[in-house]
Length: 131
Image (cartoon, rainbow, N blue to C red):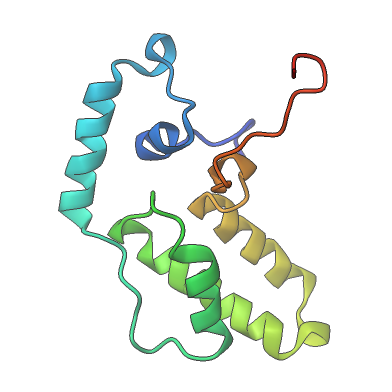
């Protein structure tokens, strides 16, 4: 049976996107130390040598910019890239169940959250409070 609501976000991702709240998640320094321990335990996410074609381009386009990912997410990242290649090779033969799998991998990797996308550093002026 599925659990209700959104899955909890990893501590490192909360620190990256700025949603870490002291009242809800505890001290940010402790969370940062925990995230660094996880990074040293699992290591940095490295690109596998066997990726080629569309899978390699998916890795470069989606996985490399995701700085919050560590080595523990390697199986999900590789599976996402393999599904991406399968989709790009034959989009008409790509069933809806595979789309669901690809969306699930993207959500698990934190790729669907718009707050994780790096901007140009400039925010759009607010409609009501901008000057």
